[in-house]
Image (cartoon, rainbow, N blue to C red; front, side):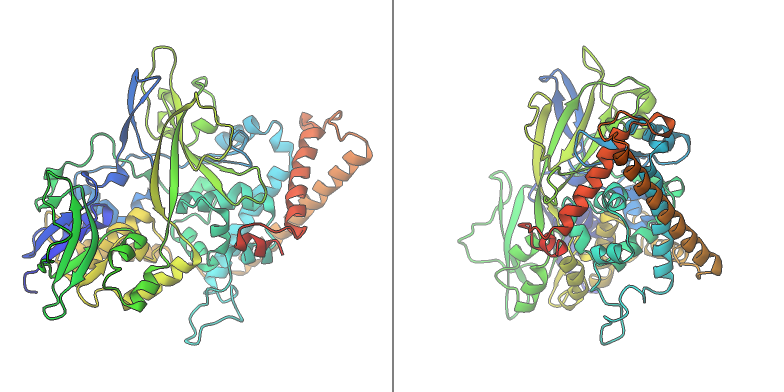
Length: 580
């Protein structure tokens, strides 16, 4: 391929992976970014606590990944001498931010039992806990069974004309069809999917094509008991940001690209951008300078659409219009310090909480920071001690539980986050129609339909653009595309579903019968409690659990079910459809 002058817009994972792959090519490459730092989404930001007396660093946004299943991101990180921290997957879920009832540890057994006991006294004698555990086992078997049969049962009557799998059945319809309870959805399934996808709207989860979610869970090796989950890492880079001198190409920092134009005769592109006064800048009123042979838009989809507004065709604009972003507010809160040996929401890596309003589809996701050394392997970053006490803090996305305790809020940030919806997944399949059709390539996690993880998708998209569109080849000190492909093939071979056996059918039947028995017993105990007049919690169940707690939980589940079946309408259109 003849040498080209290439502009990469965006210095995130996708932009830097493209740049890395082109490092030894003959192309002249320039990097543009609206900020003055590289890989800003991966790095900590400096903050101060206790009125400026304690300095530390936190990550305002977070993505988890499995290093063993992220060969592209791992290769990029190694090339830039970045080594993300390793943190076990530890999660809580609740119906309100102050009510963390379930604490999912990275392994079951003693720690799982201790977590449930602490947050639900007598939980081992609470049938809802047993029902939830059985439903998790049942979901894993049902999902694997449906995927094993090539997803034919997911949409028997809705096939595409070419015979490919249809995307008509949503997650909500799948859960309803298989009769998974609200308890299972709100205590296990929704927290898991929201955290994996970084989704802050429950309706977006319900609307996703179920085949995509099941394939992702299987690829990530999560259709098993949590005790068998893989080694999850947190993609947070400790310390200062990646230095600018780690790249050997011109970096136009603090330069926001507003639009591009293309010369009809030569096919060359002109960039219109604004930079700081100290940086190279282009007068927006001047004659455009057509100098770029190829443009790589390694920015979010909605930003790419805005940059393309002057030259995009109807097809390009239509496809890009399905890639949108949400405004996310991240709040850093300080919490009262807990004893060093205690468990709690702040001891978990991730905390998931739904809104107390049953018709509000929003969720809150927070991730915790602790100082305690004995628990440092379960946290994202050990905080220093203040003069008075150890510091326990968390970053919460979309804090929506007023009134806020302003004394606990230390700082906040706002940023745009790509939104994953059904329309996004369908549009990803159409991207190939506009990808590299006239010297413009799109890169970023939003361009990939893979089931690995956001940073892995971003790095893979950058490598693919460099290799497929710009002729990049493997080189010793950078990216070995052949090694990455071998790793991807090995991962794919590990993800091949085994054929369903007769014992699998018997297991599913046995779990269904066990679940039905527990639910009947659950209902019978509630009825007996009502008849005995212990609604106010004067009696005790087996193991010392108060009836009041049991009845309160049953009433909560019944209230949610009643709300969904009452025909009430929500302002959110998709939720209104679900309530029909």
